[in-house]
Length: 315
Image (cartoon, rainbow, N blue to C red; front, side):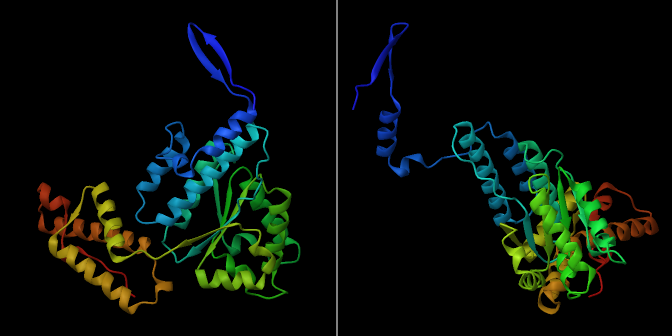
């Protein structure tokens, strides 16, 4: 092997290695020494999204997935800069989970991240469900679906309860919506991202009816139900933001109610984070009515939600 070249620079000697020498040295570096200790500071797009994700309760797998997608996109760009082959994998996704588990919120954050990285030109989110896609006569569905895709170009088309498009069989117009989306996923795969969302079991059944769909969604994310502790955390964060707090008795009553829900209600019919937010909003209104009737407005009472203020939804 040739000897390394030595070049003088202001009295100092620099060693310049040729490509063969650099390759030989890189092979000698143990794998354990190239494990990163932390993400470098220049990744501002990821840092900003991580800050927003940190405000969300739970979702550890989702947060990990977003980091991995970011890393893959960033490293591919570096490979391209070095003249190496860069992957062009489609980024269409499937979100599986019950209502109120944060699917729409995460989709909106992904749009924001991809816009910052230049993957999407706008990063906006267009939300749709069956009624927005399926028409009333032949040809109407394809046109409605194309119009929605056109609105979502540069951003994300988020279709909730997507499994409902496959429920009517071959003659149902939902199949036409699926076929139209699939065509545009291929024709415009780098101009927008399609996210199909819905209950886990129903989405699995939907995929089994349309086997060609599975391979078109390389990223599948599961959104588990929140635990009781996580639901309490969501409620406490919401109260803190609004400058309220639960009394000791109210906190215990909410926990007992959530425990009853967990043991007696079908998880598929439980609205998770949305449920606890509804409790807080209704209870704040009930507290205001109580204070009005009592004519009591000291600071502590204005901030405190008591057990008799709590309004639970019928289940």
